[in-house]
Image (tube, rainbow, N blue to C red; front, side):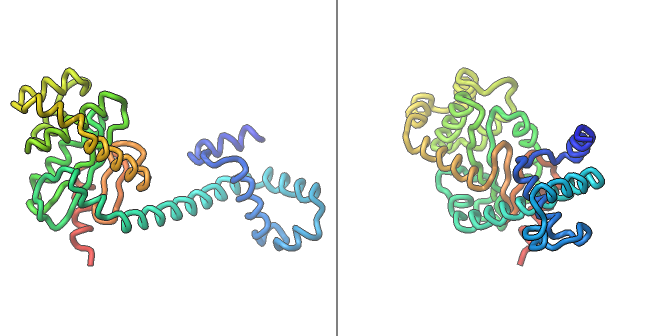
Length: 264
């Protein structure tokens, strides 16, 4: 029976809650469920612990689906709490999200809707979604894009992010960013420097700017901000007060833009 119950939970895709949390949720269910036959206070005061445990066991054997439902409710509650916390962060740190001077802006700087993207140049999903972002940008002259360098895939990603922010100081961010996203193979030190040379950037200045502590500070702020917004992977998007974690398509991104634009 235990094996069958485990399989049920795995199929439900909910075996992600610590066992003690599951036990707590199940106990609460039994204490409050009218079908279990007693109120919480009755169970606590009139039933010996071993008898209560046996009754719980018997109930589970007869109704294993209760565990799935209890875990689902617990997860829904946890998700709602986390999203409420994220919305508070988004409101209190709006300047960092949308108006950090160190974050490059592409598109219409005075646009009525801002799309913020957290990305890594070595993330295959970011490269794939770059075409989506470009298509949405090209089709809407009122969009303002803010790019948050979010290098989480190792030293090569950090090098590429620093190079992109250094290229920004030369007024060449947009084309450098696009070239890196369209490049084949890893964005490592060799390929990034070669890309800069092909675009005609001042390499000496680029390398000097990459060593500026202010650029590392900008990356640190992005990493901290992403963590606060529960963006753990790439890509991640912020559109208005909506946060989209993961890759997306043109239709979904446009819907988020329309929602932000039409919000009272």
